[in-house]
Length: 499
Figure 1 (cartoon, rainbow, N blue to C red):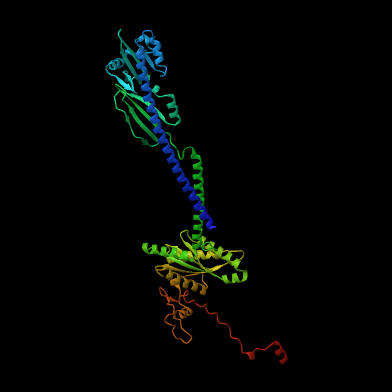
Figure 2 (figure 1 turned 30 degrees about the vertical axis):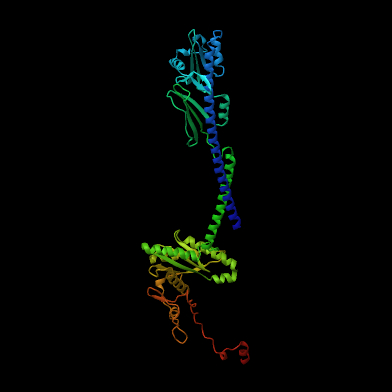
């Protein structure tokens, strides 16, 4: 089962990593594609604008030549001139030949007309004297050509909105590329400039300037993509589902592994039968508590509790019933102490309690009585009532280590059991002959015990045996009346016969 949990954890992690890597690659591809579309759109926009400028210049040049023919109608020639440039305006010869506004009234048109007489410009191999400028007020392009004839001079002028410089095919491609483009006029003359790609958050843009065809002014062209590609573009929903699924699986697998780890940790520190801390965990907690008590001089108490007559319960009612008794006794011990106290099972029918901050004998005695009353006040399981013998030791009075406190508390508990009282505190024990005999480890011949015998436990004025290293024998049985000699015992039959 643990292998399955680990496999699920690894599998969910692999799914998350693979999806994340795929998302990163997909997002990078979308970004690259977006940059490519911006660059291509910028090239197409510039090409379309330059092509329109060249065509307008050629058309104006040709219209100026045609206007020298007196048989042609100037207005018709102007209308033919704007046919390829929607929303454009043109004037041929004079105001009567205008399709809209009288462009000859504009000062910029007159300036361009003068320049057209002074230079010959070649565009794509075609000689064109038409001059180009900008009308910043109307965001338009001005194209003007003046011609001289024998009868006088003729002027052709055309004004084209900058939006009309972009062909329909180019605009359609830009729209499909999901980018936006702008063409604006600038009064300042400039050379042709193409800037590098700029990246600002989700914005990718390229700006460039078209200035070489102009007598004055220039055009600024910009193409940009501002739409976010999201997590993975159109595949965002699919990748989001995979990421969510991987996250859920990872959380579930991680939670089960963590839960199993906590269960193992709890199992290692908890007594399975009673739910109390086991001996190892109690020792660890007690060592830390003794450390804190020594540092802050607060004192603490350790109690050893041994159930009376538990062996008889096991022998007569069975081990399963005995387990129920142990669990019930453990529950009552927990109920009888404070939340800060620690109750543990030391082994068998023996329990231990750590009471931090409890250092006064009166308080220890009151706690022991409360524990004893709570345990033995009512039957624990069915009609079975249990009593206990409690021994207590106080830090640092009876020892400065857990081992010393446990040995003195154990001696006090055994003295309580042997004398029939509910509890004893270590320094109130009176040395009995049995304990003194155990302390000196005398042999039948009165010889002292070997040198390597267990050392005695000293608690204040009391010296007793270490029951944990050399168990104390049970107290001696009370003396019984001596049996009469055999010859003085007569059976009823013999008595009757003698009578």
